Length: 328
Ligand code: F6P
Image 1: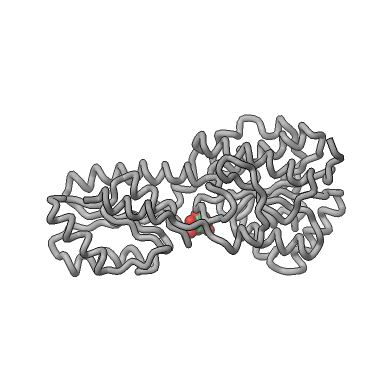
Image 2: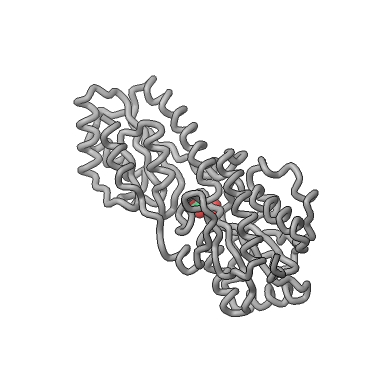
């Protein structure tokens, strides 16, 4: 085997946490150990790099965390790292410790920081996509997405019970600041009458048409799943407009919120996290940098941060069509 391009690495989690981040951390630490690379964990994302909050990690420091939600390293959205002075402090701490490679686990904000850091100081860095939103290009799924999807599905199933019992219309908001993946797939999985997502230009007229069709079909209750980033208006505006158009409807709003970020990761997320944690370390060892490790069609691939941040996974139009066909 060729000599590794890195000897001492550090790993951190940053941005919104996601189920499976711990499993990714475990894979990074144990892969590093397997290849005799020293590994440090950094607490609270970029803030830990700046504040010199490092801890030496080995296989036993990540025992029993594969199934744990959240991130044992904790996470943050660092404002200081957005400044050149902050990044310089972070760089000095890496130099002081002789760390020559970084693994960052997070979403597009995390990768934007990593890209700038690499360009300014030449620090070798590989990213692992960890976000429930699934809005990162270069991987079929992000770590945490599958778990969040199942959490949303289970919650909407429960809302369905009470909606049916009371003949109610429910607007349910799921997470996804800029992306409708959770909304689209949880909506299909729970038989939502309509799904509103930021990637599609939705109109109130289309929504009303859906309700009219549902009435004609004999439905006595309905669920509309709305992505947080939906552009038509807030979920309360939508409920209000619907009440004005259909005064007889008994309407309720439910916002699922941060429960979607918590919980024990699903099997799919644990396996994905394990593969990407391994992929990040062997990528660094092979001299790759400024790239994100991802899984596409079951293959480990590396996508430049630039592309991972700027490009977007397209919403599958067939799924949108399917949801309409099945919601009759
Ligand atoms: O990026 C993941 C995400 O969960 C988004 O879906 C959501 O908009 C955002 O984080 C919420 O962030 P915060 O925890 O800072 O409120």
